[in-house]
Amino acid sequence: MSPLSLQKGAASIEFALSFIILLMLFYGIAGFSMPLLMSASYQQLASDTLREGLAWQHYRHTSDTEVQTYVASLIEEAWMPSQWAQPCEGNSQFLNIEQASGIWQVCLRHPSPSSILPPIRLLGWEFPPLPDQIVGFAILHTREVAP
Image (cartoon, rainbow, N blue to C red; front, side, top):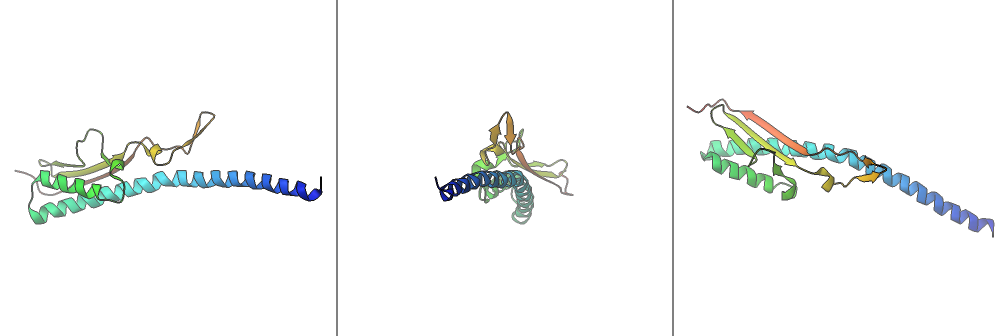
């Protein structure tokens, strides 16, 4: 066998090993940054829809039910797929209004981040470690108190 053919085989093995390492490095960076990006996006969406819902009710003088429907439609029209945004546990809708205290809350979550970025499982270890859920929560206390 000629030395040239041995070098071609060594180069392909080196390429395969370096490609696997670079692929794992890229997946690790994406795996650690994706939950952070999603968490910030959910938080921003919750804040924006709460602000928009309060302004919408103030200028249109609508009922709480209409505002809750409007906030739900804003979340459904957001950039994320509709199945990614669900009301938080214990809530039947995204917007909760407590008239007695004047507190407005928007809470949305993604119950399984592993469906967005599936983790790699090796030897009982999961990479990247993902949170159980991603939550966006915004609360606003209006100074108006119901009589």
